[in-house]
Image (cartoon, rainbow, N blue to C red; front, top):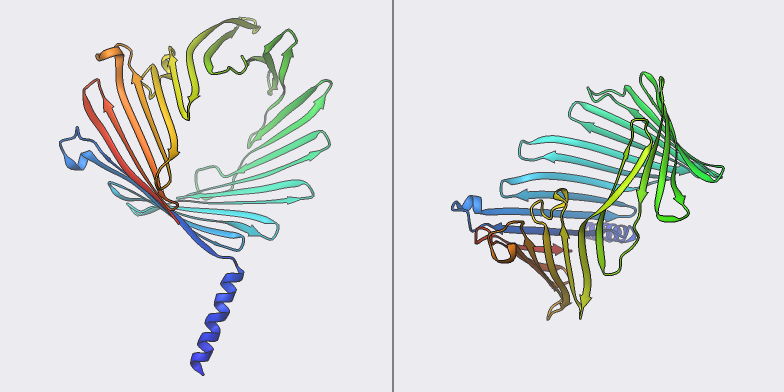
Length: 363
């Protein structure tokens, strides 16, 4: 009799879980990088691994993310998201396992009632609390956004920090945006602005205009917006110069071409290259030019992808200023398993500087 009751209970629980449409999914993404230039093995080997597991039941999903590197267990996150009546709720809890210590807890909730959306974002960090309340809606041609910030960041409090109200409405022939900001001390500013004022005979140039009122002054700012259009095959990096004179009038100067690029596909293989003369936009923060070929094709087991990039250094010591060679490949061995590998060769020092072997498992 007892066995019959136990079997009946198991059947009921099984039917219950099946009716909830529960599922257990996850992934394990790992990369191991070897630097042959390091004499110390511990310094030559680096590990980056992330394990994620998600349990989905009904309208809710519960996730655990574990992060491991060569120093050990370095991150742990628990996440929950779902629907509770008319509310959508998300919660994220983070820990630092190496100390161990609590890092943060964030809860986000939202609801939409009669076309008006309300939201709340609660953040708890060690000894500090924040709360942000938001509301937004549309009434005809008028849009309204309100944000109220609570919490000083000095302790577990909800002291009033500020409120920001954003409006959007049509006026004459333009769509106007407006923002009103009040802090704990009172009124700070209100702005009114319009975007994309077109020049009929200069289609690649438009203006944004904004007026700001503070307690003791009013300012008008004009900002040019340059849109040279889309390029076919080739791309150009264009910098447009503008400034304001001593009276505040907008002065638009000359433009300069700081880079050129090329992208095309030949027989299923993509080719791209880019050159820049702007020191603030160097590739990998070092190289002024690169060329890359990449392809994705079917292999015996699944999709196979490969890319090879060559980087050039200004004043390099090798032939044609070739300074760095970077190659990567991935093979989808099965629908749940992918193998990856990459290598980097620094020709400036004639060294094989990195070899990365990785895999991704999903279920």
